[in-house]
Length: 115
Length: 115
Image (tube, rainbow over all chains, first blue to last red; front, side, top):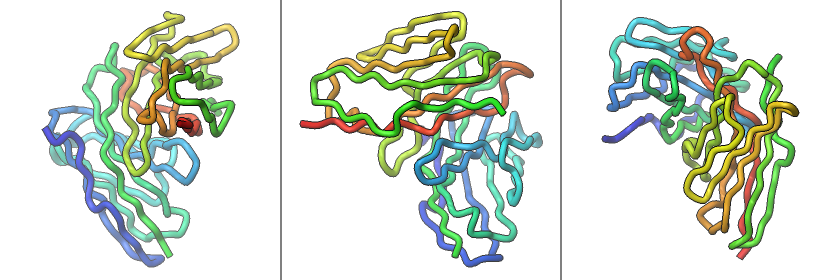
């Protein structure tokens, strides 16, 4: 299994540009997540999804959109990039149910710079 | 709001010594506490978790202690090795609502292993 994969690894955007961060997992996990990590900080939840067609906001959703058309893919969309969105973005997935199985598997991250 | 935080940003220990990384939390409703290890340029990797009704759990070279009275969590790493150098995050998870929402992360402690 490849686990959780993310593309691209790095990206530089100009203010106002748009882009989609791709995330895919091959573990048949129902739950998927997007986090951002600012320098020297912990991760903050942007959006999450409990299954195809279902998404929900996390702690910091403003400026982002997500979709979940399949179990495997969970892309994150930035419509009008702002310098405040400069961060490292991590996608994660986990088994559904939550009872006794909180482990989330993380991708390698996408480093985004907005100038 | 509720948060999970760490006492020390950097911890330096000699190779072979034991390391103790501390974490304070404020959400008494959390059901699980989890430790993640993040190496430079990589996504967080699960180390060990502990359910809120336990006070100690051991893994391979790691022990997590939970003191609910003072809302304190610690990660002990025995006989530290160079490969233990990383940033360590504590995170908490509530199973309320099915447990689908994400983790709440603390800021992180950078563990440096001196030769």
